[in-house]
Image 1 (cartoon, rainbow, N blue to C red):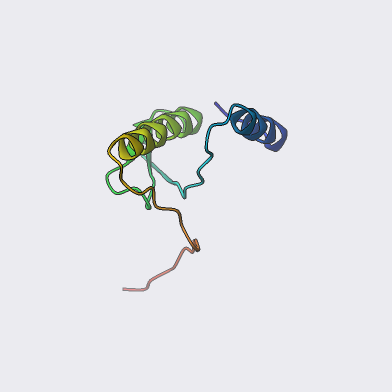
Image 2: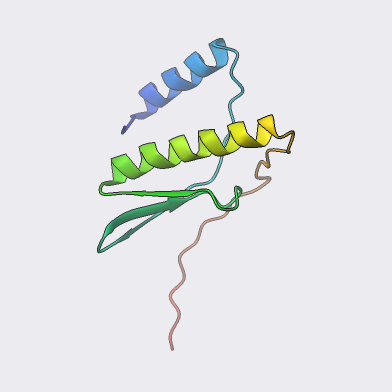
Length: 93
């Protein structure tokens, strides 16, 4: 599911109007020769994969939702990032 910003805003509004709590997480998506791999750094062990970027995004969204639902049902805290910084570094060796 590849949403443009307007669709993403509409999805957020629908979630809020349905009284669902909306959480925001960092997601890292990496491409390699086998497809795409995604993980949510704030949620240890929460990762997914897919053949396309869009499939991977949809899969990680589902994985995050299930992970958060499990934490809430277990009475665990759902971590939220205070600050996120993303940088790529070139390292000469």
